[in-house]
Every structure is written in C-alpha cells, then in structure tokens.
Amino acid sequence: MSSPSDTTTRPAGPLWLLAELTYRCPLHCVFCYNPVDYKSNTNELSTAEWKETMKQARALGAVQLGFSGGEPLLRDDLEELVAYGHELGYYTNLITSGIGLKPTRLDALKAAGLDHIQVSFQDATQAANDALSDTKTFAKKLEIATAVKAAGWPMVLNVVLHRLNLDHIDSIIELAVKLGVEYLELANTQYYGWAFKNKAALIPTHEQLKHAEERVAAWREKLGNTMKLLFVVPDYFEKTPKPCMSGWGNVFLSISPDGTALPCQAARMLPGFEFPNVKTSTVEHIWYESDGFTRYRGDAWMKDPCRTCPDKAKDYGGCRCQAYLITGDATNADPVCHKSPDHEKVVAFVDAAQRRDNPNNYLKVQKPEQQALANTAEVPVVWYRSDHNSLHLSKNGS
Amino acid sequence: MNTETTQALPEHPKLNRLFRLQYEEAQKAYVLLYPEGMVKLNQSASEILLLCDGSRTVNAIVVALETKFNTSGLEADVRSMLQEAARRNWLDA
Image 1 (cartoon, rainbow over the protein chains, first blue to last red):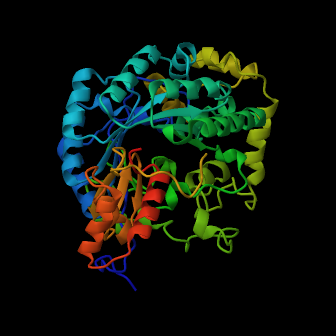
Image 2 (image 1 turned 180 degrees about the horizontal axis):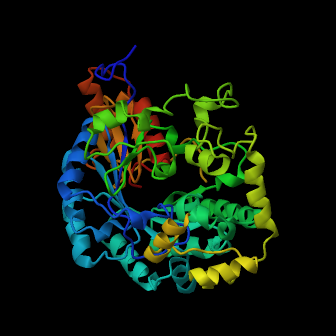
Image 3 (image 1 turned 120 degrees about the vertical axis):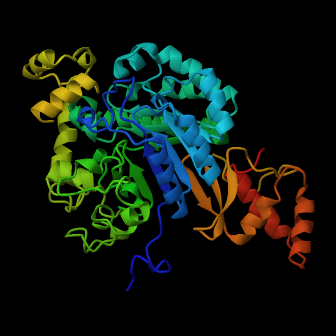
C-alpha cells in the first residue's frame, strides 16, 4: 500500500520538465505538433507562475528542463527563467527555431547559464526550408546557428523529416557537418496536431525511408564520434509501438502555455480528461494524485492485447494519443502494434501514401478556398500552422 | 564505428564540456547530464569522473582513489572505466 504522503514507496518523480512557454510562433510549419486550435487558447503563465512550477518540479527530482513552444524566444522573460532554472540545478535546454535569437540575447542566455540550444531547420536549402515554414528564415537560421556554435554551446540541430524533405537527407547531414554541430536529430514526423492534419502530404514512401536509413548508416560510419546522428523512425512504419514518453506519468511533465499539466505535449486532445493546472494544483498533487497523470500510469488500465502482452513493460502499450486518434479509444493498444485489431488502419495510411504522386506542388496550396479546390483534385491538402488557419479549423471542426 | 575495447586514453583525462556531472538527491547518485539526456552513474564511475578535471594523469587518478579508499590495485579498473568513458565520448580527446 502506498499513500501520496508516503514518499518511500510512491512512484519516482518526474525527470523532465518541458515548459511550453507560448504557442505563439513566427513560423508556420506544416508538421507542427502543437494543437490545431492553439489560437483559441492564448492565456500564458506569468513569470512568477513559471518560476514556482520550476521550483516545485525540481523538488520532486526533475533535472532536465526544456524551454519550448511555439517559439520560446517570444517570451521576454526567457533569460530570467533560464537563470532561475540554472540556479535550481536544472540542465537547461532551449528548443528554438532560432528566429529572434539576436547576439544580445545570446549573450544574456549565456550569462543566465543556459546549457544547450537546439535549433531547428526545416530543410537544407533556402527554397525548401522557407516553403515548409512559409517564412523567409533560412538565411537567418544559418546566421544564428553559426553564432550559437561560436558562443561555445553544444548544439543539437533538429530537422523533422517527412515526404517533402527525406530525399534531401545527404544535404541535411552536410549542413550539420558544415555548422559543426555535436548532435543531429533527424526526427521523422510524429503525426499529432498540424502534422496529423497534414499526414496525407507528409507520410513518406517506403523507398524514401529505406534510402534515408541507408544514407544515415553510411554517414555514421564516416563521422564516427565527431557528430552523433539520431534517426527516429516514423512509427507508422513499425510493427511494434514506441515506448511513448517512456510511460505515461513516468518521467515526463509537460506544462502548456496556460499552465495545463500534461503527461505529453499532445495529450491535451484526449477527451474525458480534466488535466490539472499549475495555477490551481501543486506539482506534487499533479504528479502523484491527479487523474490526468495516474490514469494510464503502470499497466492496470490496459486491455487486451496489451494486458497479457510480454512486451507491455517495454513499450507501455505505445501512445495513448495515437490510440485515440486512430481507434477512437485511448485505452486501446497503439494501432502501430501488429497485435492491435486496428493495425490495418495504420497500414492503410502508409499504403495510400505509396500510391500518391510525388508531392512537388503541395506547398503552393494554402488558402482555405484553394484547399477546397485541391481536395476535389485529389491533391492532399496542406494546412500551414497559422493563426488564421487555427481559427478557421477551430470554428469548422478540426 | 570503432568498437574496439581498448583505445588510447588522453594523458590528462578531462570531462567533455558537453557533459555536466552533478549529484542528484532524487537519484541518490551522481549523474551525467547532456542535451536532453541523463546517465546515472554507479559509485566507482562517479568517483573516477570527479577526478577527471584535466589536471591529473591517469596514474594520479589511480593514486588519489587508492589513497581515498585506503586500498591498492585499482589501476586496471580505473583504466577500463576510462576507456568506456572515452568510447562514450564523455572525455575530451
């Protein structure tokens, strides 16, 4: 038996605190995992509320602190929050598009004790980068990534991969080599938020993936220890599910811009939850007692095939959000799993992508009225992440 | 990738600046922190890495540990741990 106050037998505390400081973002990336209706929720925690949350999570054992968004640089108090996180003993990570990272802010973040910066690129060329983000940001990003390296930070270059850029894998890796980054995170798109909305345009072909995997293996051989290449396989192509978030409420605590506490950034979409908020609950209560964090912790909630599966301790039944998005029930097995009765739905998404033509022109489509046209022409619709589209989709159902 | 078990050790082992070594009360252990990740260290690994400040030779690290724990014959263990650390890129080359 354990009670919330019995600190010797209760589950471990969080290790990761992800502070999604804002949903505001200067970019409009088509693969963004932020909620499609983000614009209908523009409340943001105050500086003092963020600090209190950081303090409480640290007391429970959280040691990695990520500042993310949206674009965290849009918060004027970022430097102050980084300094406080550093003072508390966190390893502080800034996860940014780079846009807004002026030399004065770089200096201030260095002084605040920021440990690491992850800069995202959308692709290796100006044309592709700027098309995928619907902004003219490539040149700026190059400038900023160079400045981050010059300031002596370890740098992770993050590129989200999908159908529209997988074929550029060599030039993406060459860009990382040129910039001299320590880690290159090649993260195949996870289909949540805007990415789920746009999955018809984003799901790659088997050939594209196979080619990319071969190229990554060849580059690993060549680069050795000088750069670490992380390649996250898109799980729609797998037969066993990812151990999502290393288990629900197990290590990861994500705080949304408005203070809603989530076991993963995407969990907000799940119906039937009243996720707790740091404005009204302590982090300790949120982690150990709230329904939002305890409901799918451990394996007591599982149904078959997970309940009796020998792999349940390894993959935790996969992703609750994916189970909900694709099967309509978050307590089902993640349909990526070949044992799921709904696995064929995932296979169908992937199969449909194989039959589609090369999506050269998708990204020219962006106005809702043009999207309607595109639909009739059987060209997958691409929704840029934008305030306009967010409001449109919130109003008309996403 | 080079996966040989022995590799040359730096003369004065120094923790790679990409990693931060600190004690975590919640883990009751030293941990190595790096971008978006953490490795929990056992006691001997942490005792050795704490001495990798770039000022000591491998031999000096061995002597310091043998003195601290009032024992002898640690060299082989220290060298093998440092080799593992080097393989994992925890040390400056």
